[in-house]
Length: 216
Image (cartoon, rainbow, N blue to C red):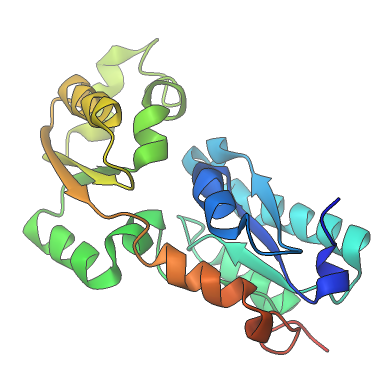
């Protein structure tokens, strides 16, 4: 059985289910790190994210102790500041930035993408894999295809930010662009800024309560 975060002085990482695979890959060989996922369906319901993260925080502290270091693997992700308000109250840090597209692409590269075409819809590996479930059916377009112009009429292109060089996922992303009537582009990002941020969050020197912003 893995050592608990409380015993090792490491960290509980609470993250969006949409990046759970990447979080597990980045932390699997770090003793004592526990990844707790939040339902990826909330990607489409960002107003519910803060409450879901708060539930995970309460669960982590109930299980591992009130002072266990916690890091939240979310950007703002459309919460309009409600996630930051929660984390400020709780003394917990998160991934910098507005959303996963920014930390995968890198802040400067993402800004350049937006400058090129503000009407850009983004997919990651997860969203390419789950396009039908999370986006197409999630928006009800399978039942009401007439809503497609309402949702996507202001977009001009779909950019697939690829974490892996997977032809099957690229084909899925291209098919998604076709279904939405958007031009398709693929940008290989790997894990972008996610990897160094998570590495710092779970590093032995960075895992203590003070370094992670947890009240001592």
